[in-house]
Image (cartoon, rainbow, N blue to C red; front, side):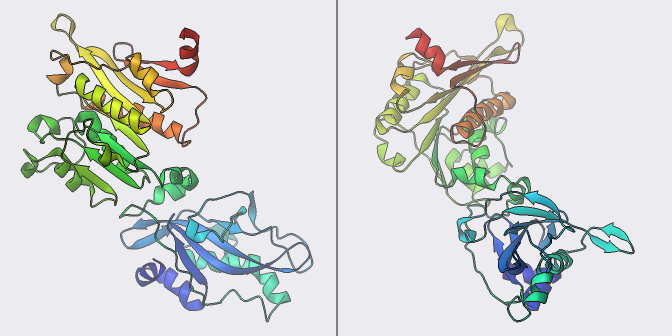
Length: 405
């Protein structure tokens, strides 16, 4: 990728032409290897600068005036610590392709122009200044060895499922959390209102593959509880085909199939590590549960129950329930989810509830991310009910289950 950046960004091109060992990590960090510096004993060491960037068209911009550094604290020729650089110890997770770069600290320094501190105009000015400060003493003490201009090319694989740059993850410094999903193969059973929002959320995560299943066609009412753009020719096409078209230009690994899942569908779940069940028919849910439990696939089931008392405002609740493989059968037996059909359910006739579909999907995704360690979880909760009238969430935990058993 660095060649592409150099062809569209003059500052990156100048760094390459001067001989810096430039590379671009798939976490959207610019890496400058082969930076010499002195340790506390004035011995020659080698480090690397790491700095995040964002895309603006073909142009890249830096986040701020700071840089990360792979190495220990640098020292002057007289053995004193370099004090012009602020900051301190920190860590940063890069991709496996950059495993040789182990960030240990972060530095802060600005340019001095006419006695005033100013931000760097571009990456060239930034790297040049930090090289002067950190590598300068080593270059002076070891003039024949300490040369940062090695012209070395380091090619890294673009290890991402996304077809556009996910620069916000690097800016927020949550790359190591995002990578918890890299080997996940997630299935969504049902691409209706809530299922469509589950798909939308999952496409923005670093999961390796998303498999979606729904045998229905996309009708006019579906658009009113469906995220994303809309085109007239989508009507009456299979939902799987519609959503495949909406998202396949955004990322790799989307495989949506126009079919219903039943007891004979085991082959469709080969390799699946997690599943979401988003169907509104109790009998279908029961058959799907039995399949996932037999395959020992953890899953979250979502649903909502709405009613309209006396013809007034809608009321009811949303639900998200996690079925871990070792607990799934017991939780199914306790019927946290409806496993029989109720044809008069209000949900099946009222489609103007996109916000409830999105909220239902959000509850499920939040729980999934807690399970995978993306969000901190201080509970053993597995069953969540959001009540519309008082906007509260009632949770049931594993501890509650232990007390009732």
